[in-house]
Amino acid sequence: EKKEEKKEKKEGKPKAAAEQKKPVVKDDKEMSYLGSQWSKKHPGAASAMNMWQYGGYFVIFAGIVLLLYSEISALLFYRWKDDVQEAGTFNEVSYPIDFHTKQLWWGNGWQAQYRGLLTLSGMVLMLVGTVTCFVSECSMINDIKRTHDCSKTSYGGDCVGLALMLAVVSCVGWAAFLSACTWLCTRGGAAAALVLIALISDMVPGHNPVWFLLWVAACVTIAGGYLWWSSQPQEEEVSEEDKQKEFEKREFA
Image 1: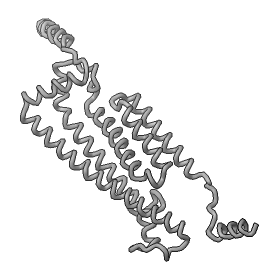
Image 2: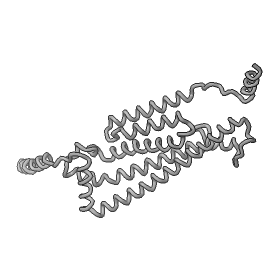
Image 3: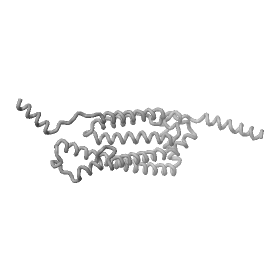
Image 4: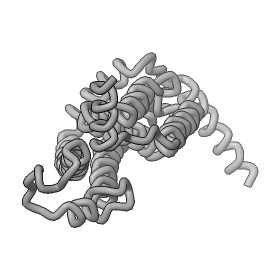
C-alpha cells in the first residue's frame, strides 16, 4: 500500500503540474481560432456539429414563421377593429370572416383561441432551435477545455448551462424585436416595451448568471409596467352622435 501511495504521489505531481500549466485562452477570438483548429483535426465531429446546427436553424426559422403569422394575424384583426370603431358600423367595412369569430381567434389578448398558442409555440421552437445550435458546440468546447484554460472567456462555465442561458436571452430578444416591428404602427406602447426588452437582451452578457438574473428581473419589470399601464382606465371615447351634437352647438354659437 505504501508503494502504491508513493507511485500515486509520483504520478500525481506531474499531472497536477501539467494542469496548472495549461495555456490560457485570452479572449473569445482566440477561442474561435482554437475551434477552427479543432474542426480541422476532427472533421467527422465537426461535420456532425454542423448538421445539428443546420437542423437548429431550420427549427428557428419555423418558429419565426409561426410567431410572425400569429402576431400579424392579430395585428390585422385589431387594425380592422379600429377601423370598425372609427366608422361606427359594421356594414361600412367588408371582411370575409365574421367579427365575433375573428375576435375569438385573435382578439382578447392572450385569451384568444389561437394567438397565445401559436405565439408561444413559435417562441418554444425558436428556443429549441437555438439551444440545439449552442449545445452542438459543447463537444468542441469541452475538448478545448481539457488542454486550455478558458476561464477568461465566455466559455468558462458549464457548457450546457451557458447554452441554455444564452438561448433564453437570444430567443426572448429576437421574439420581442420581431413582435415590436409587427405592432409598431398600431400599438405604440406595446412596441416600445418590446423594443426595450430587445435592447436589454442584446446588451446583457447572457453567459453570466448574475447578469442573467438581472435581465430576467428587468424583463419582468418592463412587462409588468406595460400591463399596469394598459390596464389603467382610458379616456372615454366620444361617439359620433356626441361629436355631431357638439359640432352643431358650435355652429349655432
